[in-house]
Amino acid sequence: MSVSLLALVPAAGIGARAQRSGAGAVQAGRAPASAAGGPAAGGAHAAPHAVFDAAPAPPLAPAPLPKQYRLLRGQPMLRHAVAALLADPRIREVRVAVAPDDPWAAPALAGLPRTVVRYCGGETRAGTVAQALADSGAAADDWVLVHDAARPGLPADALARLIDACLGDAVGGLLALPVADTVKGGRKDAGGTAGAAAPDGPLRVARTVDRDGLWLAQTPQMFRAGMLADALAAAARGGVPVTDEASALEAAGHAPLLVPGALRNFKVTWPDDFDLMEKWL
Image (tube, rainbow, N blue to C red; front, side, top):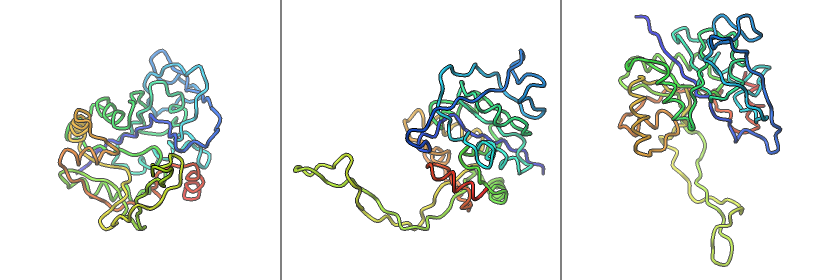
């Protein structure tokens, strides 16, 4: 039976941890908009297969370049992440959810097939995914994959492995890797006569955490659209912290599948990660 999947890429943040101290502000251009609300016909960034929602004017003041638009091998990281999803023909469309005033997404993704940019990003990752789900018009039973814009190294075989595992499951699941290193809990070093923790003092080991059964979550994470939307809404109402889509499903009482991921599918988080990812790509 033919399977058609939808993929969402939340890309509304700036990735503050990936910014080097003192990094300069960058202002990027935006694809010109036509009267109909898309890129101008024949414009510099017009593409026959890429569809863009009406975009607002670029911000007047320079803004920090979000990490998803930093170049890796000459292309924006976001473009690599979307292209990795497009490698599986079962994914009918990739919808990239960005901030309402984002000036970078359209030119970064111009020319990619089956790709839609939507200016519906929220204040948090969970909010962006919830709004992108609502914007997509997906039916409750449709499968949706959510992938980080900062994971451009997703291998095609890992993506296929996740899809194959989840299609026959009642809940869905996520790519993940078992923890290989010894895990330590830390604490601030005590300082002062009262023994209070020094705010900028050294960190010391507080405990060793049993790594047995611990996994490092990756993306994509694949769930039914209705189940994911309900779980995100319930978490928002209850004030439950949502760090990834699986955590929302867990809070709702579900147990997602853990599907073996890949080392090269790591999340670009810190400044030095860009150099490492370039070696993988």
